[in-house]
Image (tube, rainbow, N blue to C red; front, side):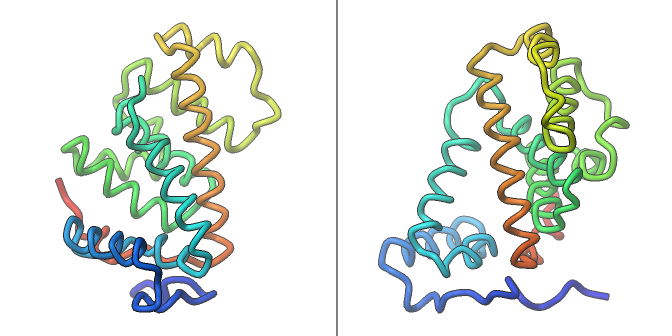
Amino acid sequence: MPQPEHISVLGVADPTALDDDLKAIWAKCVDKLGFVPNVYSAYSLKPQRLRHFMAMYNEIMLAKSGLSKLEREMVAVVVSSANRCYYCLVAHGAAVRQLSGDPELGEMMALNYRVARLDARQRAMLDFAWKMTTTPWLIEEADRAALRGVGLSNDDLFDLGETVAFFNLSNRMASATDMMPNREYHKTER
């Protein structure tokens, strides 16, 4: 049975009625990806929040960091797995497949990251992401020390914490709006 047809149960803005800067982003997405990510469409109901969401996403996921793009995407999937966020599991699982060149890694991250062959750094990062998502009140200095022990700096710890926090926010918005992923993500391979 296919996923529901809606983008968000709260509806989306008419793309032709968007401000010019957002229309330009829509056009760029279509040109680069072939589609507009449904998260943008869902957030289009609140244009200024969409701008802030995109800016924060770009800063967390694309800006220079001691965490690789793949590592940040793996964190996104593990957080989304803990939260059972369908939208982000599909969208960021596709990104993990693309960035890693491994068609199985995205599914391992989504279903049980512990079965994946990860280096000590990645395992520690994902263990931290899982704990911070499922039991954040239990995070303590020993958790940060373990991350430092596998080579993460304080800047890296900040970036990791912010990535985990951002995807907890995103997951909850996706759940609140019953956001559906673009079908194109299901077809994304390496």
